[in-house]
Image (cartoon, rainbow, N blue to C red; front, side):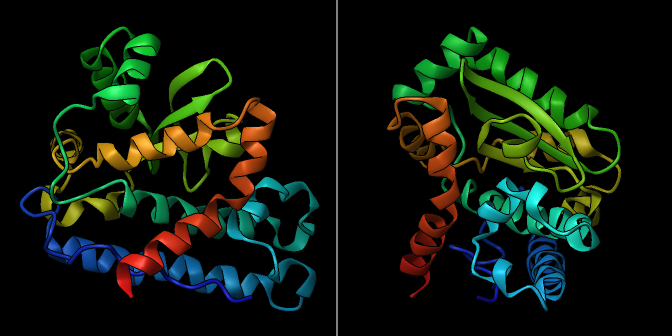
Length: 231
């Protein structure tokens, strides 16, 4: 199985003025495509690994040969993270979540305002390159950040339901060194319906271990959803 670049469910200019078209095009066709290409290259000569989904590779890093483990961790992480990132944004996004997601945020953080502040701080204070995340964990929702292309499913044992890329390539063309402005703009395109749907899928499982088992198949579900959108 060869890993492929997913199509975006919207046009490159759809998120303007918050995220500009040129940044989106380069980010998707150069950076994300680069992770896909390097992941496939790393897996050449390892047919036993080529049938695994991207999330299965991440969840079984300890079984990956030492000679390619770092390449798989970095490039598979980049592939998964970006695929989640594209689909938790929507040109009709923004606002505040209600329903089960809104209640879960209130229960875990006290209020949406407090969550907003904590997530923005995690994104703004991540040194160098990395990501900020809202995740479902065994004791509720948590905010965390990861370095480089690490994913919280193996750094924090939590399932990401919202992610923000704070690598400079995600914003520098438009915002230069003004990362806080980029973070503020991101809130205008968050697809809360998609985030709520991810939380609902997580909560459909009775235990956290079962939830992590479900996550192994999440990548196939994401690909199927993207295929339906782009067909």
